[in-house]
Length: 600
Image 1 (tube, one colour):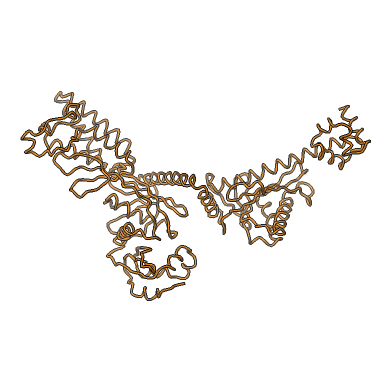
Image 2: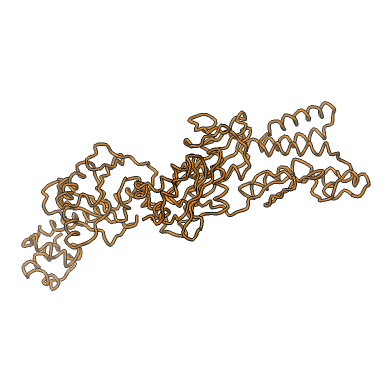
């Protein structure tokens, strides 16, 4: 129910790109959104069809008491403004970027003979910041390479030319062990030092090939001048950088500068991976988690993540590689959805990263809260099997017989995706003569749900029939007889190819062989088979034993059943005393039993 005049609020909103903001009755900002057409986008929230379908949006709309908006020049400006406002205000109903870390940066200090350090704080002092890096470990490995390859100072001395000329400083231990060339005493000039800094900038920006070519030329010159000590040092540096490049380069170096994004979604959260590629080398990568608030689409989430990452990493890449089309019009940006080639390899790599991150995160959450796993599995099953309800209660039927004899049906029950063994049941088939699997299934299903209806017990959301179209049709016949066909879902699973059949659909559904939904269905089927076979063997063994007892004079089918019920096995009957036998049979029968087993 709308408690404010939304038509009046929308009336003055223009058909222009911009950002809109929703406030509640306490004048608290509860949602921020972007649009290429503000009027159309805001109006869509109050559309009756949308209002009925999306429960989360319905809650948001019910709280809106005021709408404000900001017009911008382009959709891209709206995109960037939305991201910055969400980060600043963190409204209740906006996607939450789960990123409470301050990531490390490598900083090249703005000073004479610049030091290279790492920091978590960016200070506007003219220094050059590169990053951020998704982990301290990655950042330290890069700093370690720089330290091993280049001789840079680590001291904080003010190395101005007047101070050096005045001889104010003395070289330290770092010079003595070869980690520094001693600029403090004028033993290294600024031009030579800054050449190392320029090379380091190129390495951090992925331009390693150029640095390697320069080193190769220097090695040849040093060798030609018979300066083998210098040539050896340069060769060692070359090998270190070449090794680093081999680990970093993933595609052709002709891909000079692109941003790559991929996304993997669950019902309530999504994960987005970002790769920054320069000259064929990944120089930055990170995966973030996004908590959904309003059933946002993957496109909406990815658009927000792209804006966030490009802002965070200060990316100027003009090409963005994405897994699907993004509805953003900008003459300065190109969105590429590759189908093959080097960029497709990059996208696949990004997808591998995001799927691994997603799997790891979900496992962590589910260890802390097992109910999350159950909810996720059931939601996935509902989606995969196209069910109207979460399959919290599933029942599976299986039939067993031996050459047409001893037919039995078994039913196993799963609740919240786990076996509920106390609810397992088996049936002795009563109305079917001979090996008729279809009729046996029809009887079992009819008896099971007729009883549940009579006792007022809840019906399952899903029934699984172990068998193909014939068994499924038999089950459907019983459900229609009981008038409950529209109250639950029923599918059949064919054993050979794991095909899933739906009533009235001639084509089967094939699930991914690795999907959790198929694994649960297979578990149900295997449990039903195991439970049915166990009962069937017991019944068959009892039948065999019963036949053996009937070979004794005076012992018929009824007496044999009574004896097995009392003594449990033929062995115990054989060991029984006459007095014990008389508790079940008459004196003549007891003597016949004793005589029979004394001869056999």
